[in-house]
Image 1: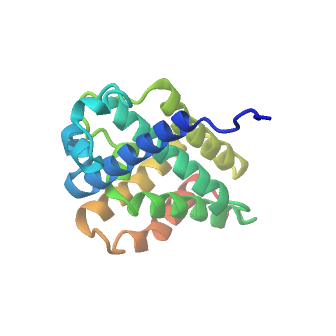
Image 2: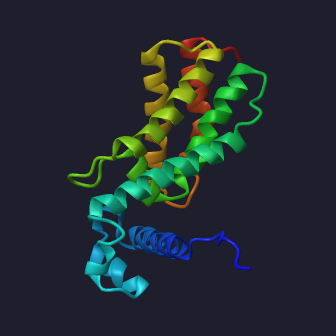
Length: 198
């Protein structure tokens, strides 16, 4: 007796090909810069003709969109583990939140640029992938609120502070720790200003 198939091999192959394309796009982004990837080079690296890519992604921006969603989903999963549980002391909790984001963003320039900067002319994430970034930000705002930080301007300064240090790290000491070493001090200055207990 023939049983019902439990696997759809066509869907599995398609998913594996998409994964291979995205892996090639990330590799190229890390080599030549996120804004300089080309579908032709991606296709070449996965052994297919450029027109064949269009059966998986309808444009280069669709590749960027998948990468954007992957990057934010990766951070969301990483933060869920790295921030659980948060320290009981509010100042230590704020420090941990900043450090987890800083380290994730500083570890990969291409990923950071795609997630946090507008380096790709004409690219905007789709509502579906942007929703992941919004969910991450909303979660951070909720956590900061539990620590007594509720003013949106204070949250915006915190985001700019941590993001700015990531930018400086990438720009002025890639692979080093010059700005990573300043993070705790900068967050303490901000926390003093907004009243997060030491």
